[in-house]
Figure (cartoon, rainbow, N blue to C red):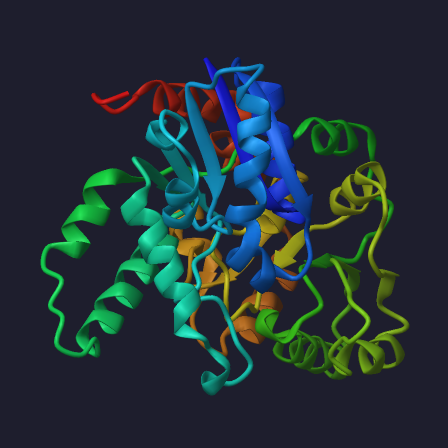
Length: 363
């Protein structure tokens, strides 16, 4: 098979996913990409930008299908491509959806981006969501927007979306993490808590650090490793935490290499999420692979990823962490690691190959 990939936001988890796809799925892939910035402009104009470039490529190489991320407006793309290219099967992968993507204030949400996601699904032959939570929030968003649509009743929309969509987790390459976990011997007797999320408000760092302050105030012995991508503007609580927790912090900040990131994960015992938003949870899965036991909110995508014993109810984090501190036997690194096998490319590559091979009858 020959597949053309269109990714207007080629960075972060989108890039990692596509790099793994090309490495682990035996298909002849070609890529057209743009750097991961200015996502709103990408959604609006990636389709016309790519259209001319697709035709230039197609003169020399024929493709069996076009594979897009949800930042491509597939309906517009089809309308701009001439026959026969416009009739190629188009598959779309949703890492996120614009009906549920977090905004700081409700009035910031521009529902037109959600509508672009909707017409993209309708114009695609096959659609995959990274989790059931992602698909369900998308369907809920579609249902809500159709209720307020004036004098146009679109019937059967949800059924059409469900019929052409599947849940397909993005594969993860665990090789560096496995190597680090195998080679590193923990030198810290205290339990080590890992935070490895974006330094943004939707990950709720305020609640995370408030919980750590409470643990420290009770005199409980622990260490903390703070990882994750930080930006020019970051929540003030990170600066405060570096002062208040200076005795507990083993590392604080983004690391440039996957090797160093993997080694730091392998030093951890517990990985915590306090997120208000999560479509998947690659950072948690990576930390669990390295031997950390997860403590996660009992909502979002997390119940799909890990058993109920690793989920906590609202405001329960302090109690759960304290319980683990008093029961070192609860930290079972081998059991934690075994929960991640199903997220590896080794387990998932065949599912992607089958999905791509399931071409529509008209192809």
